[in-house]
Amino acid sequence: MARSNARPTLAQERAATDAAQAEEAPERTSRALLRQLLPAIVITLVLTVLLGVVYPLAVMGVGQTFFNSQANGSIVSVNGKPIGSALIGQYWTQPQYFHGRPSATINLQGTPAPYQANNSGGSNLGPTNSVLIQTVQQRITALKAENPDVPAGTPIPADLVTASASGLDPDISVAAAYYQIPRIAKARSLSQDAVRHLVDAHITGRFLGIFGEPRINVLELNLALDGISTN
Image 1: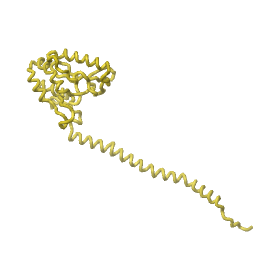
Image 2 (image 1 turned 90 degrees about the vertical axis):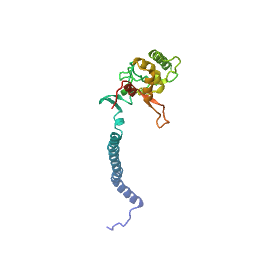
Image 3 (image 1 turned 30 degrees about the vertical axis):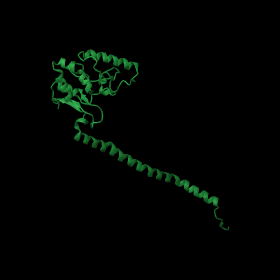
Image 4 (image 1 turned 135 degrees about the vertical axis):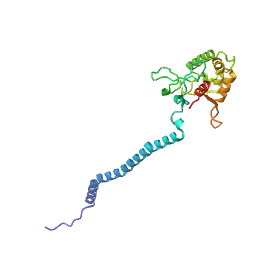
């Protein structure tokens, strides 16, 4: 029987090529996936080590070395015992101490509690809100009753009757400190000039001379009133 020398048709060749490519497709896909997946895994590991380990350790090292007090909460200590933070206000009520600005923070149970550092926040009430207006009026009344020796007509410092956005503000304005001088001088049997001199000695100026307003840290001023040295 004579052997056929007929060559495959173009359609047959194309079909054979497609079949061969179909067999190789899974292998090519696996190789392509591996080429893309491997760099992604390496980059993820490298970034995890750099940003999750090296960078935090470097920042912590710089903070502990050059900014130890700030990195550890700016804690104020007396005789080696921490009594507060220079960055978080405290609720002062006794007449012989300067009082900070009102605080609108609440505790974890939802009850109003001044200067709750674990639940910082303001009242979020707008300037035309009737509740805020009523609250400010009540604070003004209480402030005047608490400071009866302030000369009539003395402007009331806004920070003594309004809460800050954080509710943790440790500072008051110079005007707020001056407003309280008559009460403190009377409670401590001091002259108002002596108390004013102490206030002036604790004024912190504007940042870089242009940013913010002069302010006074309430905790540091009250400790100075008691003649207590911090460390």
